[in-house]
Length: 76
Image 1 (cartoon, rainbow, N blue to C red):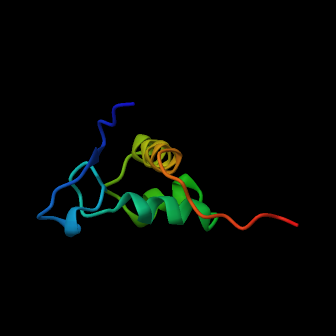
Image 2 (cartoon, helix red, strand yellow):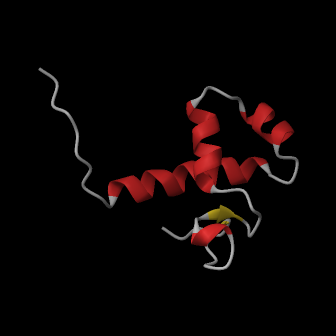
Image 3 (cartoon, helix red, strand yellow):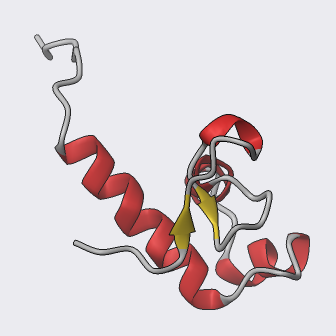
């Protein structure tokens, strides 16, 4: 999967994946969605974002998680 809206620059934000070279980390957007914010609320908080940025941030996060083994607690 190719991401056109996600950039990572070692000289910006410590190399964290960000949206379109802006200083808005993907993790920030994903966290806002996880906290229950709507797309409209996120776009209001970050006027430089576009609707498609939010979707791509979520797809990027899903892809990143699928590539790793994460320690999970087994349900009893």
